[in-house]
Amino acid sequence: MSITTESELLGMQKASEAVAYALREMMAYAEMGMSTKELDRFGAEMLAKFGAKSAPYLTYGFPGYTCISVNHEICHGIPSAKTILKDGDLINIDVSAELNGFWSDNGASFVIGKDLNHHQKLVDASKAILAKTLCNIKGGVKIADIGFLMETEAKKSGYSVIKNLGGHGIGRSLHEQPDELLNYKNRFDQRRFRKNSVVAIETFISTTSSYAETQNDGWTMVGNKGGYMAQHEHTIVVTDGKPIILTEMNGILD
Image (cartoon, rainbow, N blue to C red; front, top):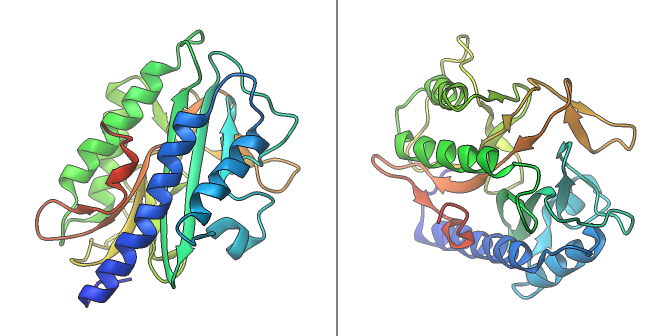
């Protein structure tokens, strides 16, 4: 969507506050011995505090309120009572929701307990890439150039990017134009970011894979060459200068 009124901006701020709060609290609540189903229920409770409704459940009938992916799962992981968090696990939580007709999205990867499996370097790289990306987005900038920046930064850190996942427009629904805000340079993409547009910008930084493949459950995605992936995501309003980070409250870049 494009922000044209103060009431639209306020609506997006409220929806973004709900998802950012839920993500922050879920990250703090997650611990060893907890099932991802329990963590998901907690996330649903946090959204309910604001009167917000789960976006993946509303839009796609997703079997959970939030997407929780663990270790080799890249994204869209289904919360399960059978998946128990362990010390050193790499976990990704993606929280998106609708509130009063406005939709917002955010996500983060982090390590449970001690960094036994040396995932923190990947997590830190993903955070740094998102931070640098956000500093370079403004009205008129080519979308493909931002993708090039993300891939270049990933390679500098010794990683690759997942090429069939990307950010997207958001606001009046979960996925809007511009779609496919990819983590690499698509030389055929001549689109530019538009001032006042609302977009969800997300990293997909991988240790070994370049593409995500859907598993038999119809939701969970893993890398085509295995390995691990870290994702960090903010919903923003594009301006002529630094973007307005609507989900900044989640603290994922602190």
